[in-house]
Length: 555
Image (cartoon, rainbow, N blue to C red; front, side, top):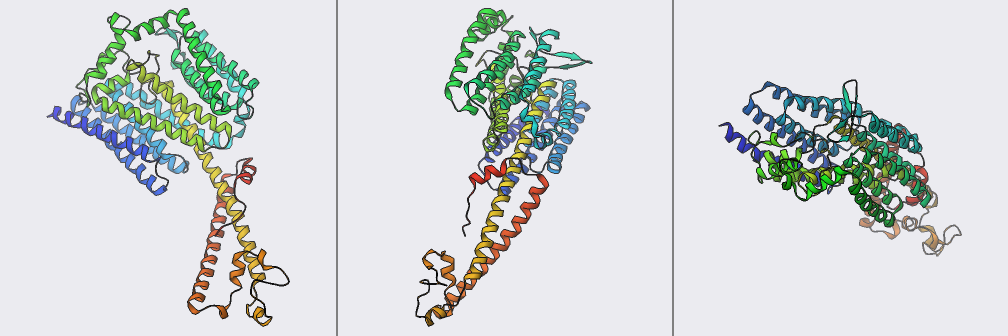
């Protein structure tokens, strides 16, 4: 009976994942807020049902009460995160929150499958990280000097990476982390953020060759330290973020081409100098040549991906524990084995959906610094997903990085949650700019409407006066040529002598509609004014809006 439940559950889990992924992309299509709200509510229901079904199946198979505790912890976490963002940050991107929670849910399920103790640790780390990250949107929104200290970010990043190179213990052939007070920190994960802030600060105003050269020198120093530490995955992530940010800041494809060419040359040099790089390259070319030795990890990962087929074996019906490092580097292989290749494809699409959401936020930001920060963090996330899944499937050589929010790893998951919180802060900042823009436009429109109404009230005269004087309405008015007066004034000159009852009724109705529009516009103007006074208008926004917005009102 339990096997039947497991068999049915794998199809239901796949269906939930497909529906959730489709809803993530559908949000990008709709502009109506009500439609987006409906989609996000559906996603929350799907997410809760996904966790309920997965943990019920695992409990039926193993009958361990710890799984019930983990399930309750995950549900409480999801509900608290949803509530906190709705109460504290009402303008946050809730679809980004849903996507993050769904990826974490997949991670909790597979970590519980591989080892309950690791799942409990992961849940605690995620809870602490999320609590700390709730302060980040406030800092991004209110603290404006963060864009003016790029050298602080650069120096801090280099010092942290140098400390890891000098003080860390070798793990898996690389210098990756430092243990402080019994807690292991992988500083290269946190330096991802300072690295992006450094490049964004350097290129936010000046993008000439000299500035790009200086930025390149400091960025190259980051990458060289990582290569010396044999942390090749992090080095590639840093480099790709640098290339994309320089291209976005300058708009010159030559810089990007030069950077990619330099990466190719550096790869050849690294292949000649470092033996571990040569080993990984040969394993990538033919992992079966040394099946019991250097190629064992890749071969077992490939077996795991293929063993479950399209729909997977079902939870606890596969053997993902035979995959080395299944909790960290090869989590994607374990997911494909028990949940299926189709589930794995949906997972890739969901990760790309998060990247598209980040890029969408980036493209709508007007301040260059914030735009570069968003696109840099999004590039790091996207390329890390590519390195992890590409290495697992033998598409590229394995680099030893984790799948963000899914694989086990304290520093990795904490850094990713912080990055998403920074993106949320930028999204809220963009909403503030939009409100300020709408406020100033309403202000101008209200002023223009008031001027038009005053001019109309002062300029109205009976049309009969023109008849008595033998003049046509519109030829003369107080000694002024009426050809220069606006159309609505000419319409107001018409009187009952020139109107039949139906036309007069239409005219009165039009006047009433115009009056209602003015009152509605004034009400909205007052609401926008109160909202902007509460949130604050970003500096320099008034000047940018003066250059962009229209200067006249159209009925």
